[in-house]
Structures are given as C-alpha cells and as structure tokens.
Length: 350
Image (cartoon, rainbow, N blue to C red; front, side, top):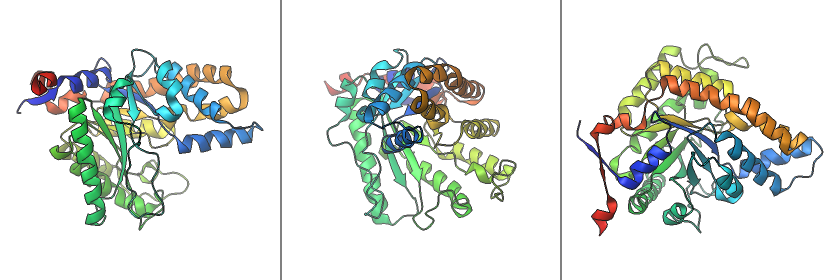
C-alpha cells in the first residue's frame, strides 16, 4: 500500500479526537431545532415554562459530565456555547458548520453553511474538527447532486487550506418514499447509504471522516423486528452489507446513532463488529442522553447531574466497551501509523 500523506494539523487533531486506541469514541449533542422541540415538550409535560436557558444548561451539563468518558464531543455554538467551555480538557471538540435543517419549500434539501462562520474561525474557537451534514440521494437528478458535489468540493478545499479535519455526515432520503421508517424505505436504504459513501470517498472531496448511517433499518432485521414488523432483511444479507462497506470506503468512517434507543444502537454496533465491518468509532447522540431531558425538565439541574453520572455514564461506557472490542483505529484504513507520512503544511505554504 502506498504511503498516505496527511498534513500535521489534520493528523494531530484526528489523534486528539481519538482515544488511546485510535478510535473516535465521541458524544454528539449538536441538535438545534430538534433540541428546542424536545426540551419544550418535556417542560410542558411537567407544567414548566420553557425557555432557551434550559437548552443552554442541559447541553452544558451533558458536556461537563459525559465528556469525562468520551474522546470528543460534537456540539454547536448557537445552543452549546456553554457546553464548549464545560467539556473535559482531554476531550476533543468538533463544531457544527452547517445551518440546521433545510428549506422544505425547495426540492433538493440543499446544504448551507453558517453565514458568520469559517473554518479559520472554527479553529480559533479551539475546535479540532468541523462537521457538516448533507442530505443526499445518489439517485436524485443530476442537477441537484451536482450542487451538493460542488458544495463538498469547496468545503474540502477550505479544510485543506485551514489544515483542519472535516467530518461529513451523510443522511440519505428519497422524496418518493417520504416515510423513512417504512418497510419501503428500508428496502432502499442499503443502496442509498453504500452508494453515497462510495461517492464521498472520492479524493476530490478531501473528506477526512465520513459520519455514516447504519446501512439498514434495524427494526426490519430478522431477529430484531419490533411492533409486528415483517423482516425486510435476513441476518446474512445485513452481514454482507456491512462487509461490502469495507471495500467501498477508503477513509475512516464512524456511525451516528440517528436517534435510535441505546439498546438498538448497541445491537447495531455489535452486529457490525461481528460482521467484520471496519468502522472507526461513533458519534453517539440521543442514544446516550435523551432520557435525561425529562429528568431535567421534571426535577432540575442536580437531578440531571445525578442521572448523567448514573445512567448517562452507563450508556456511554457500554458503547465504549463495544468500541474497545470491535472498532478499528482510524489510521488502519491507511495501513497503520507507520504507513502515514505526516507533513508540515506551513513549510508547503511559506
């Protein structure tokens, strides 16, 4: 295998975001619009008056308590500015760089960066990486996907210039099958996820880490179905899907929890590991902290701290145990540390 050249800034920051085994064991709490809705619903359930300070404090406390047990945290500055400051100093920082959501009145679900942000500014705020979410359907019209391809090419080149890793989160969709929880979408999902990951592994995008979806809907996997669902995939089919990912992606990829329950996320990661899937970590979001929202809304700050140091910690540590058993160091995709040539970008630009 030819040596992989990585700039010093990117290499050092990827190491900062990883644990001592080279695995990205990260916490995600960058939700914005959904976070407001979740907190508002919980506050109203317990007869409390909702305000944004509740979201600020919740993110601050989750970051403060759970980053003691994670290698990094993904957070947004808009609602998570307190959480940026309260994280463990040993935990790396990934900042969201995209606008939340998309224009529902425009076909295509086009991405947009924060208008008052840049990767140089993100670096200046102490971030070790930036994250951008893109909604993508590899079967969409060429004119739609061409815009997204150009968008990520510009992003990748900005990251090269700023010498900072960029994580791209791919969320697949099909406007012809709007219910992403349906068996019809479940049948499509493997092709959507695998083809998307193959596309964004191309060198022209300069993506450092792909933040990937689990390539199947776990509620339709044989042996794991719920609520009377009929299985869409056999376990052998799912095993092959996970194995196929390895040959399609030539850079590190990690999994998002996508709002599934903690038990489901653990099952997904364990199955992937046993199938030989070479994932390099996770960005675990609601699967780790969601149940804490109602605890906080009902009983306040100290109750949440107690919950985070009990059930919250347990949620994180159970995921860490799975990562320790199955995850692959991010640098193994390049043949290991000995096969990486780290160069000083400053020398190249002087």
